Amino acid sequence: MPIFWQCDRCTACCRWPGQVTFTEAELTRMALHLGLTEEAFIAQYTRVNAQRTGLALTDQADGSCVFLDGADCRVQPVKPQQCRDFPNLWNFPGFEKVCQAKPVDVSPLEWKQRIAQATGRVDVPDPV
Ligand code: SF4
Ligand code: SF4
Image 1 (cartoon, rainbow, N blue to C red):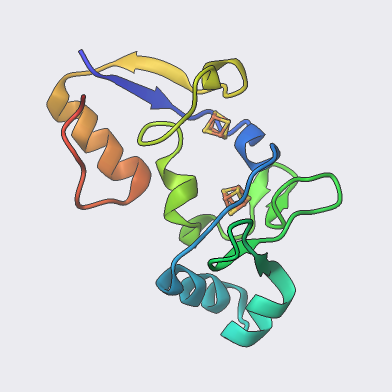
Image 2: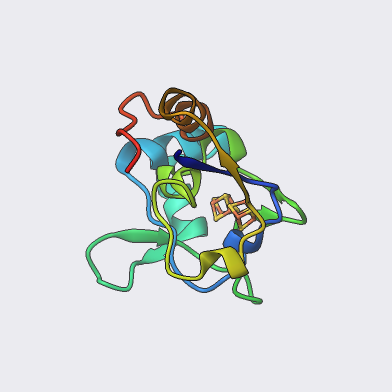
C-alpha cells in the first residue's frame, strides 16, 4: 500500500537550511499575492541560488524562510511547488526524524487523489 505523508504544519521544513527555488510563473503569483511588482519582489525577497543559475528565496536571520511568519507562510496560497511537494514527492533519507508528517496507508487511487489535493498538481505520478 502506498504511504501518504499527512503534513501537520509543524513548519520545520520552512526552518532548516536549504534553498527554496521557484519558477517564473510562481514568482509572478507570489508578487501579485503580496501586491508587489516582480522587480520589487525580486529585490526584497530573493537572492542568487547556490548554483548561480537562478533565484531562490532569501532567509531570515535565524535561517528560516523569509516568508515564515510564526506558524504561517505569508505566501501559502501561492507557495512554490517545491514546498507543496515535500515530503510526498521529494524528501531525503531520515526526513521522518525532522518532519512531523504522519504516514497513512492508502490505496493507489487515494494516494493520487491526496497528492493532487496536497500539491495542486494535475500530473500526479503513479505511486512507487
Ligand atoms: S512537511 Fe513535515 S516538516 Fe514540513 S510542515 Fe509538514 S510536517 Fe512539518
Ligand atoms: S515559501 Fe512558505 S512553505 Fe515555502 S519554505 Fe517559505 S514559508 Fe515555508
